[in-house]
Amino acid sequence: MVKHIVLWKLKDAQRANAAGVAASLRSWFKSLIGVVDGLTAIEVGVNYKSGDYDLCLIADFRSREAEAAYQTHPEHLKIKELVHQVISGRSAFDYEYIA
Image (tube, rainbow, N blue to C red; front, side):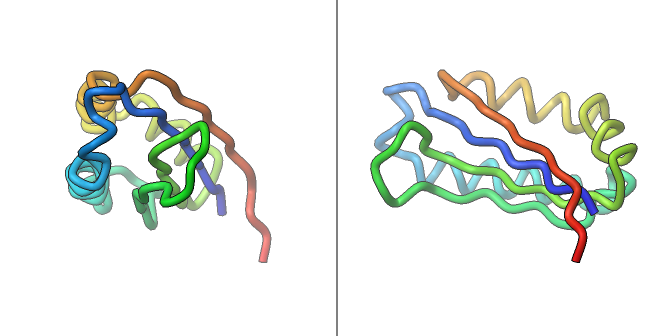
């Protein structure tokens, strides 16, 4: 299994509504389950402590190939465009999870 973790910093104008932004993103990203082959779970959360990032996405994939295909999937790219309208920074981390 592959874990794809993304941290986002919201634009200043969006920070007061971080919970609302997260709810929208959560809905959009969850709609990809069953659409993107190999995507098995996805969640979006709000950082409740101070820090460099406001939101986090964690996505689970069956394989590296599935995660790579997700990156260029047309439905993911539509959501990515919307995300870039509300963020000012991003960091990502991917790893293979072995239980």
